[in-house]
Image (cartoon, rainbow, N blue to C red):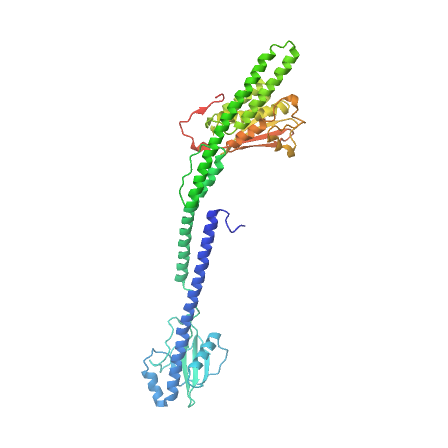
Length: 471
């Protein structure tokens, strides 16, 4: 499972959120650590100072003055007693109690015999004589704080017992965690919104680049966004215009070449009529017909996918029936299956040529029996052409789409063809955003699958004309 997304938007947002989370966690840890240190000083150090001062005052006072000091101190009421005996320790005190006792020893002016005892939950919360003179106030929440008794042996042998509540276990404040989580969420949302604004033009540029091969007439990209993205969009628009000009120039050159090549062929045909040798005249005429077909196929291949024909809605079922009728006129046994539910937005003549080339290829080399199936899916339209011929080896199925490639075993010279039929079909399909693939037919033979995407069909105007089968 990939934790880091692959898209630029996802990666920038991921890095931003991770950086924010890490920084906030560090800041929160420092804040909580400082808060814990402050609480320790307030609950531990200051309490130890007050208790040490209280012990020293009672140690220096006479027995009569000790009762007065306990009764007249201005500190909050707490538990203090001079009547309890020195209690034997029954268990080792916890670490926080030992730490507090060490702080207390440091604050005393002279060494005292001290001990700290952990009080049981049923220890009386107050002595009968407890007054306002205690140095330590009772905790607000006894259940969360460990209560202890500090006993100090005074110089005359009296035992002073003071009840004290150690600091409660430190807990991370919920409000702080909620504030950090809210800050992370707001920062992440703001980062996602900002990065989306910056990367949206890149997505538009990528979609335009994918559709450039099939539609050079698509509208230019808006040259907006960050300076780098706007520059890339402007460069893309200039590249699109240059490609259009180059293709228009090539089309004009192709038209001129077609005209210039066919004129000599026409003159030769007129001149061979004067030949007396019938067999020689027929042989030359056959060569001229083949030359004319090669010129036409070559020009068609060079124009495939880039003709000046505009896309329109095609009646697919009528187109299939028209191609089937043409093949039957050539002696092909063709059966059609399936139908299209809605028209296809495409260049009608180009699609007809593409499908016709595949069916004619199956007629020539597939034994004469051909099945043509239409499968209409939500996102694509498929034409499946199946024959019962010798098929094509799997290693050669991509090579036959190259121009002028003919397999000797099944594409012999006497069968006709220039080796451009499949190349033209694939160029037309890819010019529409689709493709052509060859597969083995179950039971023997070849299976050609022609796919056209239907994405652009969603953008057809309701009033667009539908192209018929023989448009």
